[in-house]
Image (cartoon, rainbow, N blue to C red; front, side):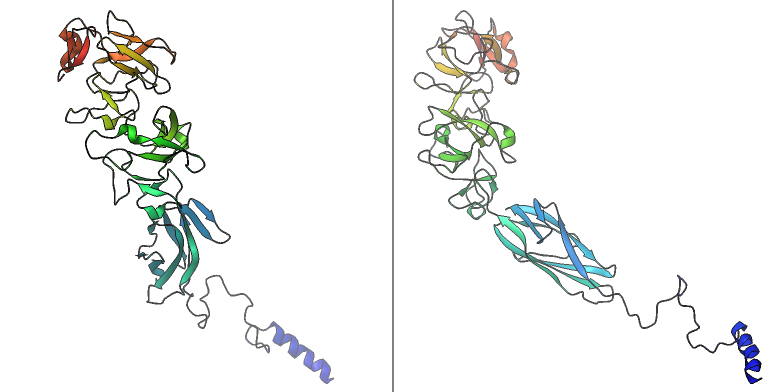
Length: 377
């Protein structure tokens, strides 16, 4: 009888919403917007970082490799509570911006450390990557500011300590050559042919090793593929990466104050052809550069001239024109045509009177034929 009496009581208790005999009767899953437990604590401060604009990045190490000098941007990976940053680079640099850019100027292995500070003053554990930056020494033809940025046996031509007034205005890694003893992939250019007639010479006016090339794209930024006099005496020619100055054969060589300068020509001769001067070469005994021919003028001079082409139309100089050789007009003949082409060369413009030469020139009447010369001549 007692067992039957207990059953209705238990059934009533189980259906009631006012009382439960179980101490864990609260819902198992809290509502989504429920507040966190009071003892959960604040979110821990933490920082990490990565890098952008890296020439070569290896995420497995991690490490960023490039040729000095090179610049990269650092990007933090941090909890939202981090509001201030302190970056330390083992080359001696520091920065407090969130995403600093830093330049590594010299070869070596460099550590990077980031410290993050929270809004209430808490400090995250510092994050350090050892040898995170691998800055390599540059090879021949690479940019530089001092010798320390160049690979072994190379020096910085036109460096910050010994700058050039012409030629590579930014430094380039190279080596001197007295014979064909340049590193693999380099050629020996005899830049002495472009030396100034004064007692001063720029550091590049010597015999230097330059990266061999076929196209401008083979050269580092700021340099292009040039046809240059070769070792030992400039009698032959090589293709090497160099600056725009000195100018190629056929290029202008007049200074801003109207002075023709031989050192502004890779051939070593600024001839008085045209209003801007024309880089040429005395071919009485010397061979002409590849792609040009020796012209014999009526006044006895023998100078190298370039055939006209789509890339060399000589229309930048008002006193030059594309004209065929002929004693009756320009007073020059081609000594031994080898360059090919149309038979027309970039030479002084033929004229009958001064007006034919415009404001920049006069019409010369002598044994050299009727052709335009600069007003200053």
